[in-house]
Image (cartoon, rainbow, N blue to C red):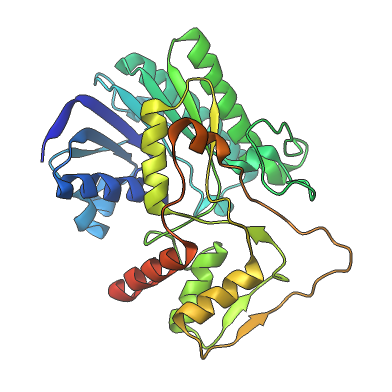
Length: 331
């Protein structure tokens, strides 16, 4: 394995789902004998992360440093980086934060990391944003393209996450213009993979948990919500392509364009993992109600970077379940 000496990446949010996906991606490169960049991973609690994930941290190309994006004095100043991948948003535990705390974490954290990128001499910056910046998907729109200019209601405090992501995207554009930092935005949707938590608010993770260890698979809503899921291996590959080759000042959707209802998803998980178990839908559909839909148009990233999903949803579910069985515990 050769280390890529001329590429030095600072990764924030490296201990979350996105970060773990990227660490596994680079470890795979190492196993294949490909060049691997030098990676500095920012963590609020490096010792805990290392103790919980020994398989992810035992690499010469990786250094873990303590710091918090919301505390600029804690960031690794005085170091040189060529690329910064900013993925530090607490989406797993985010609901435990107040709306104002979520907004501050995203906007102030992004500003701090942008300043650090400029000071470190980085030329490329990738922000992991969210498809939530588009606001509600119109019922007559099958997939959301990047040029759709809808937005979440900024007067609704429950939209703090999505509104903050819009503000963070704007900060990236400002730094691209004023600081000559080539900033790219990845608007991320929903994902599946071995690092998906199975015991929080992610429907697919909960279905896999139920299929493995519960008597039935529970759908808390009415099952009509429409989603799509990209494998975390594709996610990591797409993020690295965007960090390297995405056009500065532009946004790209990152996700699958293959839509599935939550009810159909629950039945699919059941059929793949535990055909004998029932699926119980707790909610009842409301007549004439519009179904919530959250599916990206990914033609842009395919057109400009040649990227398409390479794993089927079925394979991703099977691989995620196999990983969960091997651990014998929940994430």
